Amino acid sequence: MKAPVFATLGCRLNAYETEAMKELSAQAGIANAVVVNTCAVTAEAVRKAKQEIRRLSRENPGAPIIVTGCAAQTEPETFAAMEEVTRVIGNHEKMLAETWSGIGAEMRSPDFIGETEKVQVDDIMSVKETAGHLIDGFGRHRAYVQVQNGCDHRCTFCIIPFGRGNSRSVPAGVVVEQIKRLMDRGFHEVVLTGVDLTSWGADLPGGPRLGDLVMRILRLVPDLARLRISSIDSIEADENLMLAIATEPRLMPHLHLSLQAGDDMILKRMKRRHLRDDAIRFCEEARRLRPGIVFGADIIAGFPTETEEMFENSLRLVDDCGLTFLHVFPFSARKGTPAARMPRVAGPAIKERAARLRAKGQEALERHLAAEVGQGRVILTEGPRLGRTEFFTEVAFERDMPEGTILSARILGHDGVRLLA
Image (cartoon, rainbow, N blue to C red; front, side, top):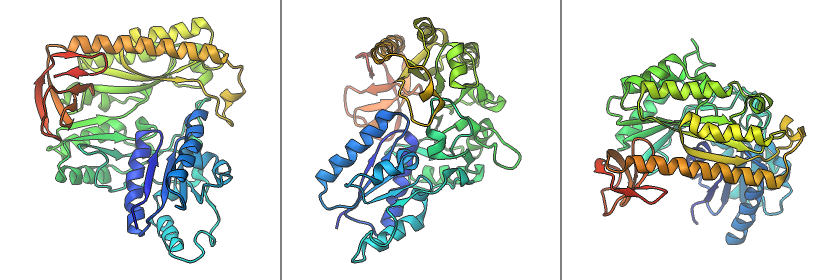
């Protein structure tokens, strides 16, 4: 008997939920199985999920294969039709103890998986609450805490609301208690994560905002050395979040922004809630409040109807916002989304624009790395010779360092990807 094999595709939230599933499956006594936690953000992500399922089936002959995650939620029939797949479970079902105890009971019966329907995927839109899953900490030295799930917005390119459901928040008290528990286990850094993080609190009594949660965590967990927030929608940044950026040194000076494009017409066709100038204004204000803060951003290349001039506006946004870390996504039509019905940009043009955006991102990263040389930085070590600065910049050490500690170091140089210290 051996522990289940877990494979995670996609975002940090998926990785967090995989850790919770490991605990739930262990409690249910499940062994000799494969669990694939899929992503649905692009058509390519679904293709990779199917490829991963086939690979794991070859490597684990005879093991039941359980498929879950956003692609399983949005396209259950796709995975149910695969001969390798034993069970398809939805995003809500995967986080329930009864789901795993039921599977565990079936695995111990003579007619395993013959007694239950192959697909267990309910209407994700009917889910009203997100529980705080008290895992021991995802990551060896940095813990991720899920505080929100789902999304109430309907960007024209995005399938994720149909995989995650509407926005639900974990109550602040539950979040604080989990972070205290993680501190007791020796974690020095916590990252708040969710699908639409800046919508946190809208469904809770009194309608608190993300900034309120951040300030409460920092006040009630004084031993927490470093707090990060994952991707945010800058147009929803509230007053207390900006106050925390300005006044709380334990809130790390790095924000990843969901920008998606730098052209107003494309942003409108994406059904985003901000315009180009809003993004620039936010970055200028955050930089005024916290000099030196760095920004990452998601940008889509080749959205339908995007002309060369429109793309150039996205390219210029890298400099206009002072972005450092770019996540570039070549546009991929998702069946069932409005963007899939819009006039497409030719495939070669999408590929070429994505390459230009990545090159621009590399230039921006190298400028940031060069500016760091000679600076003293406070680094959380993630391995004997690896760590990250306050700005989430990766650092390689010239000799072994104690893992999971926060230390000061001098930046000696860079290799185009990471700093050398």
